[in-house]
Length: 368
Image (cartoon, rainbow, N blue to C red):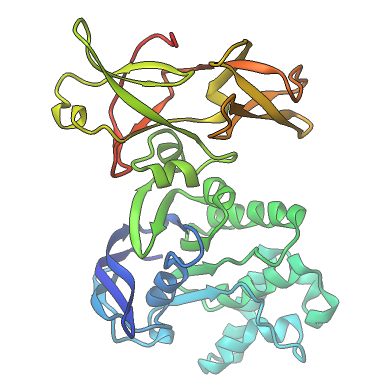
């Protein structure tokens, strides 16, 4: 096991700045997930840690050692790729032993490590099979076993479940989580799937355009997003966003109001916020309730998705602008074409300024 420290890490390809001044500390034994949209730099950052790409500027430490110039084999890392990258002519045993043999490990140690890893991953009955005789999940476990057999200090995963079907991804997520519990290894995992990030991570690193947007536990990122980007990326369905306006109230100071949602008081010391007219109100689908309504302030139900245990109701204002989502338990009585008023749980709403940063709000009643 080992800790990883990134200090002002930069990566430039030609004239393109891929990674920008990334500072991050990954503790010994932590399970950290890098998440973000395609092109945000998460896989590049993982390859910099592995030593598969050179660092343009900054220091990368594993424990207390700066490893910028060390080749991958000397960093004590093992990597599992999106493609299984198994040798088709080799058995499962030979695939798992291959890295150890390249390192000129003695035969007895190779055998002991392969068998110990096979027991952990429940591959003992498959050691003589070739990759073509394995399922997708079994192949991914072999790829993990090949990395684990080298007993690396850090295990790196680059979107390892992308090639699996939905049910198998759920199974493999559980296996990876259990593997981390058993080994206690430091694990760094890259994915574009926020569900994988939420279910696996001790700590999530949300990346956007080569920058870190926010670092925190799954609960922190869901309940206290620092930016509008994080609020929209973490959570499924995504958070609802709607424009909000400032209004003066002599009795209560400065307030914001969004159509159909209600009014919120800004903190008394938020003088800078009061001058910012470009505000956005955010509320998650499960924090909205619907009530029958008529008139211009109502929302129209435009679609209803039944998912078995829950229902998503899609709504548009009568003038047809922002699409909002309400999430509720099944059964649902709402039908397409009906009109509804929105009632928000104001203890759970979020407010963002013109730079998309989260603002503290003091909640009031939901009067619209």
